[in-house]
Length: 270
Image 1 (tube, rainbow, N blue to C red):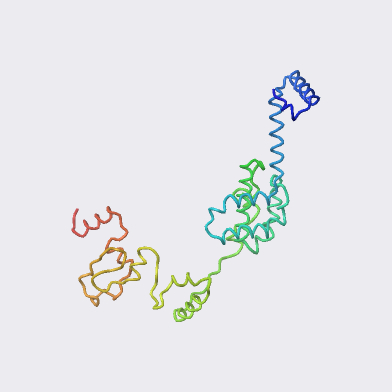
Image 2: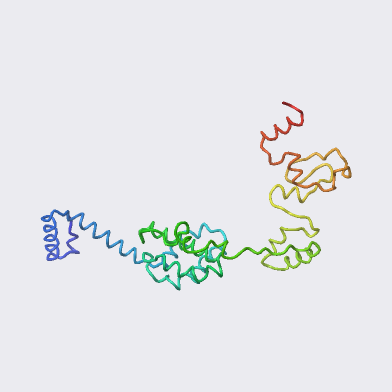
């Protein structure tokens, strides 16, 4: 059993440590195992001294690289700083209990149920991470199912969803103009409607929507599509084919098995 380097442990202290080790051996205790247990207990005590705010900051630092939306990262920090840190941010994460969690949630659950629900979820994952790191033990006091759900009403029952009334069709041009005038929504509104009123979607369907059939070819996605034999003004033809009908008729986006089955149905195969 090593007692330390001679340059670090004076002779007198080394003799005291050796005497303590012989005493433990006399009592049937392994002095090496005893020293290991003491070191583990000291580490656990240090880990449990971490405050909730420090645990939260550790969690955010280790996870924010996976949060692609900067607004989402800021919301995490803002909600914790506004609602949680003033109540128990300064307390050790090991001491957070149900009473403290309820003190945070009860003040906003009735007035801001959506925000309160997100705050509860964030407290829960932070406490789970702290438990994984050995900074706390026991059940998670912020867990919803079977715990907080017994103390608070479901958020959908706290405040009923009120939908906005539908916008009159005649007011859409003015609305779109006002929407495009907002710098923060300029890119979003540009992807909703073209200046001539045609709707734009993303992906392959967006190509079909932007380039309606006008004879010979359809779309600029790299595939050629034969125009239908019926003239544009034939019965049942509106002059602008719905991109959904193009998907159904041409088999775009269907698996090979579905396309083969469709061809068999057209031929009348069994």
